[in-house]
Structures are given as structure tokens and as C-alpha cells.
Length: 371
Image 1 (cartoon, rainbow, N blue to C red):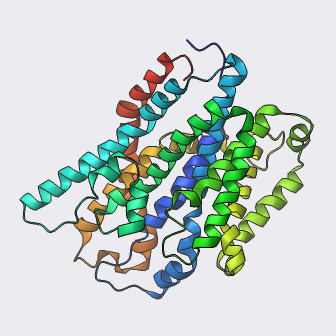
Image 2 (spheres, rainbow, N blue to C red; image 1 turned 90 degrees about the horizontal axis):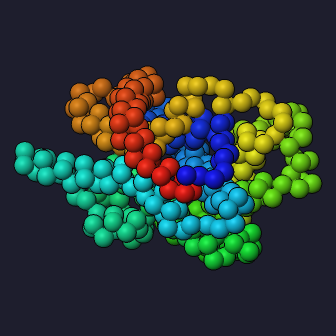
Image 3 (cartoon, one colour; image 1 turned 180 degrees about the horizontal axis):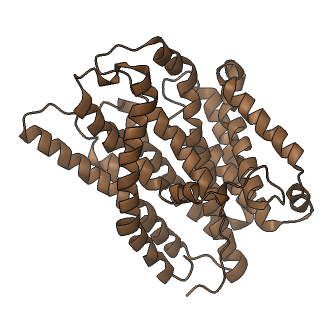
């Protein structure tokens, strides 16, 4: 059994849900089936859709923070880190739904072809089973089954989970330096590839700074010290100013990151805001709001992985059911009714998945010495 009590960040479940929600909206605000789109949708697609993706930025920063914290906490209380247990825990948490979706994809394609329907194919299995789908997308694009394309971000996270275990097993003394190096490499990569179509977004190096900053925040907080204690005392006014700057950053996102230089630092700037959010919600003595007080949002955060995984198949099913009906031509349906219907169905499936599949599997982690 575990020999120490692990810290639980009660406010961060709700933030996980909020980040998932932005990605969900980005995927479920759907263009009309007949190819037409109103002026409001065109405005959204041109000016706002980019901002919705920043939820993915937060998710990666949060993963870097939590994974690093768990490992550093194990070092702190046991003076060692069991790499094998770490990998098993990651596998038990992320692989079941990932491979369930892959199986669903193959099954759907087989069924559709049996019924004579034309349907997109699957990516080559070697990219799916080695968690390198993002590199396949970089080379060949996304002309394959709709909801399988969403798995690219899970692949990127799996790559960093594998790397983080190695870094903290054999490079613990140099962890901060290695994180800074990853941030620098990511910035150089963005500078050299900002003109390559899709080269920034889907490449793993593009997300290295997010994971690294999450790691640095975890180590900073784990060590404590004078600066940590001072930041814990941050007054509400200062916290409000930071959040106000973040909101302004989102509102004027296209204008702020329109130059080549700002495009290079785009992900880094957003990531620093999110690192502050994690610190404020987890450690500050005063909060503008404590998201963890909302039981509903906290629960949504617990099932957020399911919400992310299942919203793709549900969206695809919704599109197929409503195609050729003109259902999605109205702005109210496009921006309100469609997302609500898809969310309600996805929520039900995710709740069932969490209770009867994910939670029982995750319970196996607690049989390990450091879960």
C-alpha cells in the first residue's frame, strides 16, 4: 500500500472540464450540411475558432504539472521513483478509451462498407499503435475517419508521458535545466517552421514548452521556499489583473499574434497564463473564485477524458442523422442547439464509461506501491 498521503488538487478538476469544453465547442459548432454558412458562422470561423483551441494548451500544461508533481512527490516521500509502476498507471488511465475508439473506428468502417456506404478509411495501424498519429497527419493530412483524427493530441501526450518518466528517472538532478532546454528547443522549432502548413500545430516539439512549463511549475511548488511563500500571498487585486490580461489576450488574440515574432512566442505566452492559473487555484491563500466548490464542474472534470474521447463519435453520428435535412442552417441550431444535443449525449456516455469502465480500471492503480 502507499506509504504517504498524496496531495489532491480539488480545484483543478473543474479547470480540466473548462479546457475540455473549449475544444468540444470548437469541434461541435458545425458548418451547415449543404455547404452554405451564414455570416455569423463565417465571422466565428475567421476570428474566433482559433481561440477555442487554447483549451488544449491548458490541458497539456496541466498534464505536465500533475505528472511531474506525482513523480516528484514520490521522490520526496520515498527517495525513489518506480518507473515501471509509473508506466502501468499511465497505461491504465489512457489506453482503454484510446483503443476503444480505434476498435470503434474499425468496426464502423466495416459495418458501413457492408451496407454499401462510402466512408473514410483509417490511418495505417502502425501510427495508431505507436502513438505517432500526429506525425502521420503532418505528412499525409487528416483525410480519414473524423473522430479518429482527434486522437492525435492523446498521442502527443503519450509521447511526453514516456519521455517524462525517463527524464525524471535518470535526469532528476537536471530536471529544471532539461525543462528550460525543451522550452528553448520548442521556440527555435516554431521560429524555423512557422511557415510550414500544419508544421507548428501537430508537431510534438510545438507542445514541448507547454509540458515543460507545467513541469517547472510542479518543481517550483514542490520545493517551496521564499518566493513560493510570497506568491501564495498574492492579493486578489493582483490576481484579478492577471486574469484581466488573459481575457484581453483572448479577445485580441488575432491582433496580438499577427506578427512573425509574436507567432513564435504565441504558445509560450498562453502557457504562462495557464501556469499562473494552476498556481492560483492550487496554492494561493486568496482566490477570486474557487472552481472546486462547484461539485458539478468538478465531476465534469473527472469525466473530462471521456468527454473528449466520445464527443467525436457522437458528433459524427449527429451529422449523419441530420444531413440533407437543412437542420444545421440556422444560427440558433449551429451555435446553441447542436452543441447542447451533442454535449448531452456525450455526457451520458462519458458518465457510464467513467463509472463502469474507467473507474474500475483506475482502481487497479492503487494496488501499486505508488499510484
